[in-house]
Each structure stands twice: as C-alpha cells, then as structure tokens.
Amino acid sequence: MKSQFITPELRQWILDQAKAGCRPEDVLASMRASGWDGAVAEQALEQTLSQFLAERAQQAALPPPVQVPEPALDDSPAELWAGDRSVQVLMAMRNPRVVLFGAFLSDDECDELVASAAPRMTRSETVVIATGGSEVHASRTSRGMFFGRGETPLCERIEQRIATLLRWPVAHGEGLQVLHYEPGAEYKPHYDYFDPTQPGMASVLRRGGQRVGTLVMYLTTPDKGGGTVFPDVALEVMPVKGNAVFFSYDRAHPSTRTLHGGAPVVAGQKWVATKWLREGEFR
Image 1 (cartoon, rainbow, N blue to C red):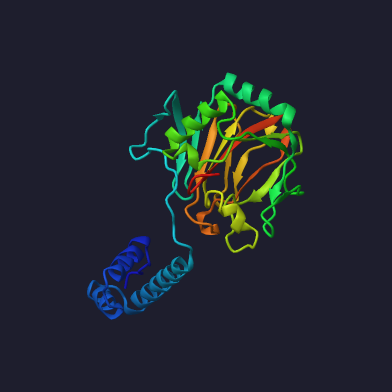
Image 2: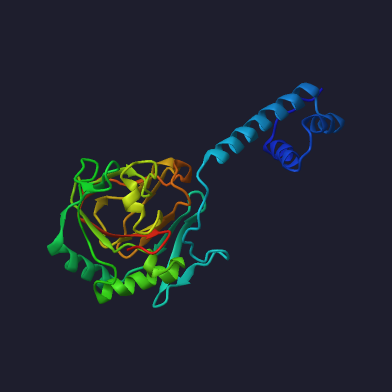
C-alpha cells in the first residue's frame, strides 16, 4: 500500500469540518471512505483537533481585542497620501501588524526636530509598573524629552500627518518623544502597552486608556547598528532618516508579538521621534 502523509491540506480540511460542527466520528468515517488508512486518519484527526482545541482555549483566556489604528492598505498601495505629503509603503506585515513607511518626514523636518529637542534632553526613563511613575533603568540607555501635543507648529503638522495616515484622531495620541542614542546605547526588548494587572497602571490608563499603536520616526541614519528589532518574528528595521515604522497591538498581551527593542548603536548617532497612540483621548 502506498505511504500516506498528513499534509497541511488535510489538517486544514479537518479544521474546516470541526468549525462547521461535524462530529469527529463522522470526519473519521469520511476520511476512511476517501481511502485514508485508519491509523493515519486517526492520528491526523487527533493531532489536528488537539491543536485546534488548545488554540481555542488560549484565545478564550486572552483579553478581548480592541480597535487599533490602521493605514489604508487593503489594496496593497505603494504610496499613501498623508494629508500634506505622499508617504511610501516599503513593507507591511500582518502578524504582528508592522508597516515601514518611506519618506514620512523630510530632511528639514528631521533636522528641525533634533535642533528643537537637543537643549532639553535628559536620561530616558521607563514606567514603574508598581506606582505608575517613571525612573531611570539600565535597560534604556538613551537620552530623551517630550513635546506637549501640538507644542510647536512642526509637532502639530507631524501629528496631523500621523492621524491622517493611521486614521486615528490627533487627540488620541501622546506628545512626541524624541530620543538620542550614542554608540553603545540601546533599549532592550519590551512591550509598549501597559499591563493592567499591575497596581500602578490604573493612574496611567486613566489618561487615555491603553496604548494601541506606536510610530517610530527616524531622524538620522546611524553609520552602523541601531535597528528596531522584533525578536518574536526575527525582524530588524534599519533606521533610515525620514522613514518611520508603525506597529499596533489590539490587546495587552504577548500574543500580539510586538516585543521590540532598539539595538545598540555601533557607530554614529541615532535620533528618533516616537508617537504612542491611545484608545481614547489622551489628557
């Protein structure tokens, strides 16, 4: 008898029957009637349904998904209009949702942001989950500062561009944060959402709800290093002046696969501006 193998197509067919409400014994009988060896059919059914049930149980235990910012990518466009300039779509990933935009900022806009931020830079801090405050932490070795939302005409223009491109209200965004990384500086992998189970997060979440999206804009191109890395999907986005990388997360859970970090700068200077987007109006 010719050897039979459990193929992805067979697994998908079994899943389709299960989702349609067919009983396992009926699926097994149908496979046998189609010429599948009984032992192979039983193994395929058991393995596929076990995985299916495990995934359903995991999904049931997850926080419910929420609406997230999303650029208009249904027709796989090469460019998008962002209200005042055309922005290139260089790469788009669905799971996790990661989109790389080209020419999001002009060289002059990048230079102006750096010049405006430079006199106000201090050592970057991270959120303290126990209290909702912030502190200097060894995982983050950059220097940074925050602009208030709409603080300058340039900030206001960039924020409106982001809102148009990502189809998310300006009022649902935090102010721009500018960061400066010198050689050796990095930000170890982390999530941008707030863990609602931690005691200090209630006060943070009252300011506009959960974070649901991040846009990192590159203001300079380092000579070497400094990429934005996504370890769960083995992705590294190189920091090119004027480009921006966007990613969203529809629940505060690692299943979003949005673990990310700033790789160490090897040579040159890395400046970025980050925009975090919230569920509701940020106050």
